[in-house]
Image 1 (cartoon, rainbow, N blue to C red):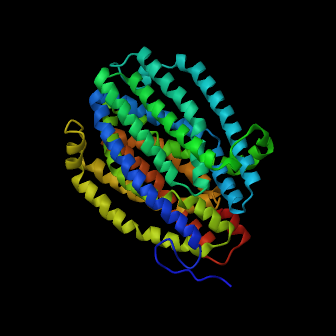
Image 2: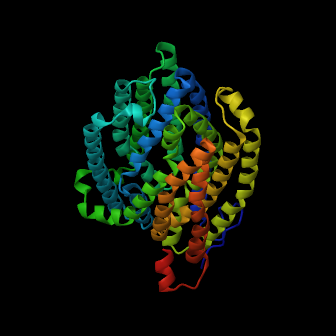
Image 3: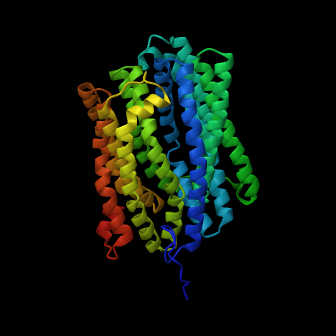
Length: 456
């Protein structure tokens, strides 16, 4: 006989009481950690801008954006591991879980070494002054900067796999805690730079990379100390499992590459079409509005693997209940967006100073972009969690193909505001198709083989 579950919160309905408690706990912890992380990062931004020049800060943000593209070159291992590991944990097969983790670490180490070797070989042939559209920073200084950032990235590329393990174990708040550690170490490092050095991008890269490395190392060590039964080992590596992880992860990989094109090319488009200084304006406004997406991500972070667990246990009612509550949250999201649009100029002036210039249109379009992104995430997290991503792969690839030319066109016509308008146009397709997919797999009881293949 099924146990009745009281309806007391948005995430506690009829079924899945234990799952809901885990989700609520990590949302609460995640909220605390995110507030700390965001607060620290917002302190770091004006300090960094003051340490560098406006143009140098634009170069720095563009470099971080470009380097972030490489995080998606795990060929889907991260997301594939997340879903497969969540399934193994759900059925309590710890031996299988250990095999998945060990194999994934082995594969990502190989990928990281390969990427670093290729990068080191190619780097001397690149004209970095042209790529970053600057004459104020020499090619030699840019070379040292890029090499330093990519070295730390290569190491953290491996260590960051721990985040997917935290998600699979429904311990999403640990990812937020890692951001607190990173922001705290970064803040201390930047203060040391300001005290003892003059503005140097290379020094900043050392601080940033070290902060990321230490924060990932600390959490990885303590997680596996607590979960000895799944700690990776050479004896647990099973090459055959790579194909199993990648068969699912490969679809996520294609989506990741497409997402890079849609979301991470804006800085490069701006720096090439409009110049480095405009990147600073764009990124400051983006960071301001990202407060809302960060708040939303606190709620979403524990849900992906919870959706996986619920779907494996055929608990669609729990998924339906959560989605309804998520969509109700769009009302406060809209209110928050309108508030930031109206007061954006005043907030930025208080935060970083009036030197950062932007017009009202950029704030308005950034607000529209945030609303559409959050709406999309409400559905894409479910589709990712239940591994129904084939159709998403198709339309995400299409939207990525049109994003760059549209963004360049609007940037030439409208300036920096045109870049975000191009992104809005690109992600609009997902805002329509994702809800249709979720409705079919989660809400409807009538299923056909044709629609299963078409919408999966």
